[in-house]
Image 1 (cartoon, rainbow, N blue to C red):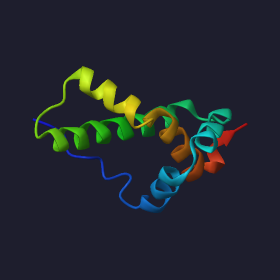
Image 2 (cartoon, one colour):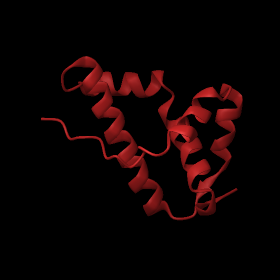
Image 3 (tube, rainbow, N blue to C red):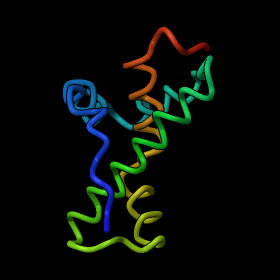
Length: 96
């Protein structure tokens, strides 16, 4: 049985749309920022990944295999997208 999405990102559609419209080079520019509170960053990242796995499962209509999760994360460039999301949403919690 799959967990439901966290709902944490329900009000963040504008940020996510902005991220999805960024060119790849600009998106990668967010890799130069670092979280000040690693515990907070990892907590939010974990919820982001759980939600991505949930939505992939919904698309596949079944629990995704680990291989499928990894392929989806690579295809959607999710690691970089999450870093950009974190920087935009929690700008007060990042450092250069």
